[in-house]
Amino acid sequence: MNTQRKDIFSDKMFRKLWIPSMLTAVGLAFGDMADAVVVGQKMGAVGLAAVSLVLPVFMVINIFVHGFGIGGSVRYSKYVGQGHGQEAVASFNQIFALILLISIFCSAAGNLFLSPLLRLLGVQPGDGLVYEACREYVRVILYGMPVLFSSYLLNYYLRNDNNQNLAVVGFTVGNLSDLGMNILFVLILDMGVLGAAISTVLGQAIAICIYLPGFFGKRNLLRFQPKQMLQIQWKECFSCFFVGLSSSIEHFWHFIFFLIINHALMYYAGENGVAVFDMVQNMSFLIFYLYEYTAKAMQPLLSTYYGEHNRGGIYYVLKKGLISGSVCGITVALLLAAFPSAVSLLFGLDSPELIAMGNQAVRIFCIGTAAAGCSIILENYYQSCEDGKPAYLLSTLRSAIVLIPAALVLIPFGMPYLWLFYPLTEFLSLGIFLLLAKRVERKPFDPERIYSRIIENKNEDFSSLLGEIEAFSEKWDADARQIFLVNMAAEELCGIILKRAFTGQQAGFLQITLVALPNHEFELHIRDNGQAFDPFSQKAEKVGNADSDVDTIGILVIREKAKDFFYHQYQGFNTLVVRI
Image 1 (tube, helix red, strand yellow):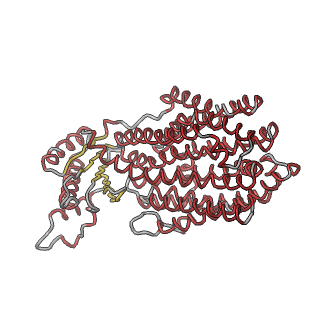
Image 2 (cartoon, one colour; image 1 turned 90 degrees about the vertical axis):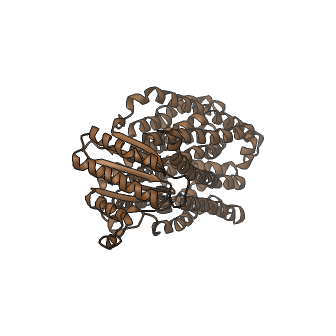
Image 3 (tube, rainbow, N blue to C red; image 1 turned 180 degrees about the vertical axis):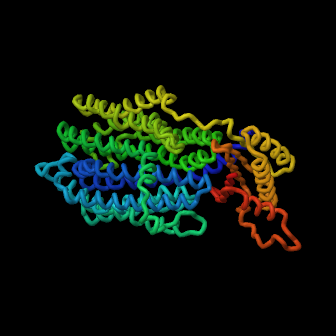
């Protein structure tokens, strides 16, 4: 197989997903930093400390949103890649209903037990202004949980429904709205952290309004189906959650970590220590979101290729993601390490003591960001291929097994040494994972059961294809009927695509993947870069006329004899799945 040809599809699809994802990453980073920047400029260390103390509440949101969002969207892409569109839409609706129920429960429980929750977060009434600011902030976030849960989940699914541009626009506009309302409520109207919390919720409400057209468009599969929402299949939904468990468990351990670090910093350094910690956490968004959204750009392709058993495409996307994410992430880390004082001033920490403390924290933090970025991308790679054990191992190393002991050991040594837990955690976690990865990876699908080839829109390329497909089918014990139907499907579908999808087009390519499944069925995947064309849309009424269309007759036979068939235009390419 010509590797350069093979990458034509993967490279174009990756770039189409990655560029909008980088815009989303930047928009989301500034949006997530907005609360801290505006509050810091207005309230200084007190405001930043309050924002940091509420971080565990956001970790609770992340546990559910990323667990169901990643796992559910992976399952959705897999269903679509296998041609099961109805199952994909049903799975989305059930998970959406479940996430709403969970958000309502968390909101009610948090407001009912608000005083114990504040003590758990690390503040007491005797802490004065910090306590009051924290109480105001957390109350609004609790009331807004259904909005926050829904917004993040819908964004995940839009990205996997060939609608990443709408997801980018919604997320970016939502976060820019958050920033604008922060300026209005906090700086102009002097509402303090209350205004910051309100702007966070309203920003995501605006994002939801922008997302909604993506669930009613004719070109997209996603639909809201109230009947499906009332028929939650608990086993199916929680199996999706377990696919995204590595991300969820990471946020659970971060929940524990933030509780430990906030209590320790309040004890050893007071609000100044917590404020610098919050500054570093918010600054990290500028770097880590570049890696995370590179991983999000990879995920739909990896999940689709996994459903197609396209190993070459999977490894190409992984390599491309590691290189692209690292170039962006390392560049930003070097800039931040070169100008750390600007970071402190941006967050309103302008005293010499706070600037000195902030400079140390920023530079030490940046040392470990490249290792962290590689871990983020590798974790997503395993998740997208539904190989949960390696993803879970890497996530647990970074968020618990290495992180929490490192923090506990370094906390008593004071602020300059405390920041070493960042690079120490990332390098140790990645090193341990690379040593253990082969032991926990799932055995891959037998590559001998996969036939794959790229052909150009030329007769000489197409002529040798059928003989290779027949030999492959015979190798895997296909009966005479299957051999005939597989060959017929490949010949008729490729033929009509070459004839009708490439009209006037010079550089046309078809990617053919034939999989011999263990249940003795054969799955044929065809992807092409021609004009939008669904061979299965040929009208049956043409048959029997004097001018019978031979191509149409062949397609109708395939539709009748195939077990399943499915057409989907994905990332600008036509995709067909036929199971025989």
